[in-house]
Image (tube, rainbow, N blue to C red; front, side, top):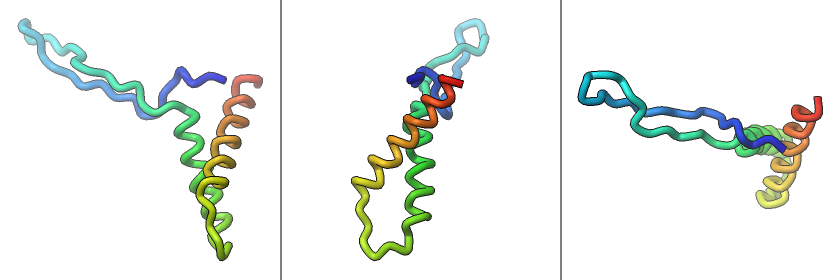
Length: 77
């Protein structure tokens, strides 16, 4: 499973002593697994919003499993 690419990476920039723009700090972003799981979680909640009982733990497990399946499909394809 490829989690090396991050979603929403960021770099903060500064000027060095010569006035050149240089990276000060970088943030790799959240993993694709985290990003996809969040999207899956939102979709599952929307799908199940009519349920009288809400179980967030099994829902989150399903979201992560779907995210893993999506990443596997992307890597296998």
